[in-house]
Image (cartoon, rainbow over all chains, first blue to last red; front, side, top):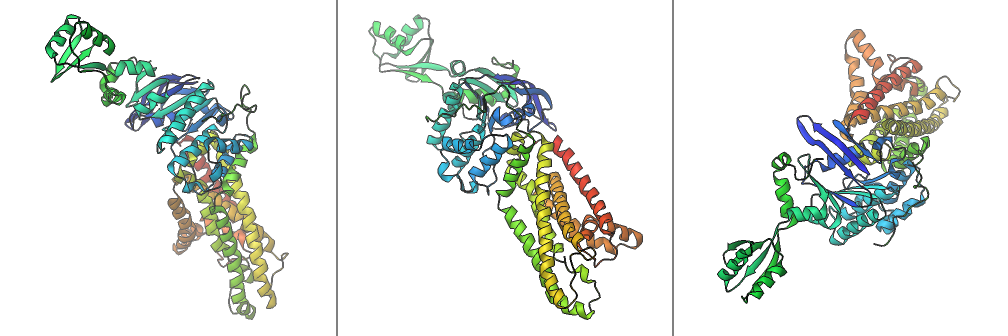
Length: 305
Length: 272
């Protein structure tokens, strides 16, 4: 479990992280979502004890990161893609990591195998593609078989197959009971990967809820209806107490599912040409939420606990 | 993906045991020897140090024997160390600055959050390697150069005054210089800047201060790190102004210690 409490980081006059609080529970994937510059990476660096909070605190399994005697066995982290020396081989990179925390050397081959880099293990990582570098970073994160896994933008630079691989891996790790904390600036990716979301913008928590809740709350939907008997249909639906708006030749109906709308119209013998559920995209919802963070910070959307 | 990440007996203890004091040292040792700059720097040290000593002895043995050089023979048997010290500076700086240049420092500090332990391990690996390499370089240079001096009947025995001291002293000086560069590297976090500062101090400023007038110039010359520290690496010096070998080395060690202490304080406080 990761617990942040009134965590704040300022750089001179600029506040990167502004008193945020959240907990990341084990057994599920928690997405850490926000636009670039929202404070995600700064927060993650504070989780790992790399940056010192200006105030507040963050603990991993009840202790500050730096207080764990063998931190790689407690928390595995993928930081920015290339925390690697380009002249060192993948195997050697993992070897020194293992040595630093008293992890058996046999584990190096295991994680190489796990991420599919065995064949290129002795190549210098400077020659690796972005995707291979990410895989090596994930191997490094898993070397201590840690109960807590922190992945900062893990799908950056990955091809679709690689993205699916990371998604599956994150879900598998959570299914094994681990705490999985994944940051991303891609709402659509998080919607597929995360069970729970912590959304931040300009250093503040904007939402902290399950992904399903977030989708239900923020992805507005309506039913699009087209009919040759446009006006009669509109009158009928309004009589049923529904919110009906006419847009050119179509009607936008809110407050009832598509099937129910169809049945209503059908029972009255009117004709339908189209009946479609329209969801505004999650990406739009995310943009709306984070686009003007200040406004939302003033009226917390179920946030800032 | 079906491979399991694995739940290992060695991880699932209540609180993982501390990996032991040697773990950080082993990690830094692996890091040190798995980049190409290390063997290259050490090969360059041996080539420059031993090679140039041998060459200069071969070229000047006859003139030295005739006595028309006006310099002591003892100043020649470790002559190449002057050039070899560049490699110690490069290696010392790179041990630190390559981690900042690549972002590796974050992986290092995530693996070992105790920054003092990281610095101590780096220093131990660097200093022990440079001591061994510096000593070996000086010994090889002495053996090569002295062969030519012996032919002219002016060779020095290992037991002669200051010879053995200068060979081991070359190792000590290289180790100290490497630590100095590593300390500066930690302060400036940039390879080119670290090299410019250290090489500038040792090669440029160290020589320029000699032209300062009077006692100022004399003491500045004596106390500059490259001047104070290097006297131990040669049986006799071309420069009569320098402090005695061990006195000079003590000054040098103090200077290195100050730089390292400063670097340690900054390192401990700074965000990675």
